[in-house]
Length: 620
Figure 1: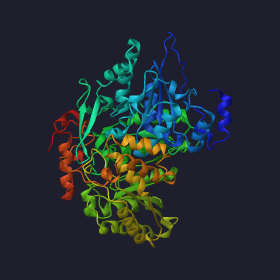
Figure 2 (figure 1 turned 135 degrees about the vertical axis):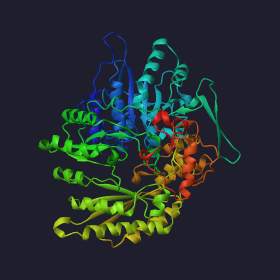
Figure 3 (figure 1 turned 120 degrees about the vertical axis):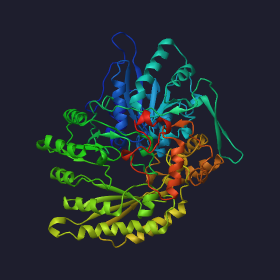
């Protein structure tokens, strides 16, 4: 593409720096190696806008993994905003990579990151603008291989007909193996199907076209039948067991514009031992693997040196559970005190004892504090195995207020299994107690007025959790409970309420538990104008309802139906390592409001016979 042509359209769009490239630390490679062989061209595409995609740690890791290979050049692409999509179409310009402005249709592979079901139509936007057929079955030898990874691969079936291959698990564990096999196929002149057949033999790689879905007379999923004998019966999630030896982000690409998480993100550990029964991440990222403190400090040094950032986020599912958190925070703060580098802990549990750390952090800069009680009563917190109490929350916010904070966010969910109106009203009662905790402190200690944001999202049942069989409550009931909570929160000093739009949560639940028939719904909704569905103001309910109706399906049959514990699941061929028997036991314990202890206090047997392989512990 000519630069003059690109400049002419960038003058007309909002935030043109989303589409220019050329950032600090952007990887630049020749397309041909010194020996004359061509590098494999890989377009790493995040199916949302630039400022969201550039904040994704996983994409940054894969970008580095692939570009460390001499035979591969990985470039980036993001879904365009509405104005850029229109400009590309109007001028007949295909969507392109940021590094070399090459049309994506000219790449060998395009890899999508699937983090959120509501980004699926953005995949179609990219394929459409690249001139690539939506369905894998319609692509020929001239088209790139379309692959994907990320947490949504737990149930890949709604996009199975679109993807040529999917990678299940930790990408840095499998990408080199994947590219080695792909490179061998290219050298040997293997055709598209033969390449996919060989890739399917790699543990963690799923080639959907080698399977066929069957449905029962009741309209529900029945089974997945292999069409290719060599294809595996189950796709086992790949797991990086040693994070210290794993490839990390390398030199971070520094954007010219503000992005959602505009700071250095350091993953201090992966996985979680707590076992919250609604939390997919807590199950699919097991076992817990920590980085050594020396490794984290070295990555801190390297990342700050090459970027100029002045904020570090110690990232994990629960930062306060890191074994060395009380040592690490002061070391980093002291190390960079002269540079005024701040530290944020984005995933704090309310039973984490972090008072001293909070006091040290606020000396540099007060970053946001978020706590997630999830439920308003102890009974419901026991049902979901949250493992925290009201006393934990009040102690945590008291410590934060004493340390100088006056702004906190409290996250809850509406619609959790067994929830009653009493549980919903319990959220308001907790907020009232937080407010009292703040205003009971002497004025000279509490500083400015309280800013307590109570956020209540809608529960979405997810695969590979003990609640994967549970229905989502209907929209009418979501709205009723939101109104009940909103009214109960009125008049509480310093407290404001925000809630997630229920229509997108409804669709998210349908695609989280859906099957292959949803690919046709997805394509039809796209044709009717569905784009950037995660942006509530642009969500087109009519487009989705029309698409479901024309395919003889409803959102309710996927989102609002209780699945029998012995019923076939559309994602049952995916092996997330945590055993099905364990999830069923946890489901039963939820209805008995029984707590399961933290895995760090003794093995609960979540991996079944594979516990010794993944966590090295014996079941109590």
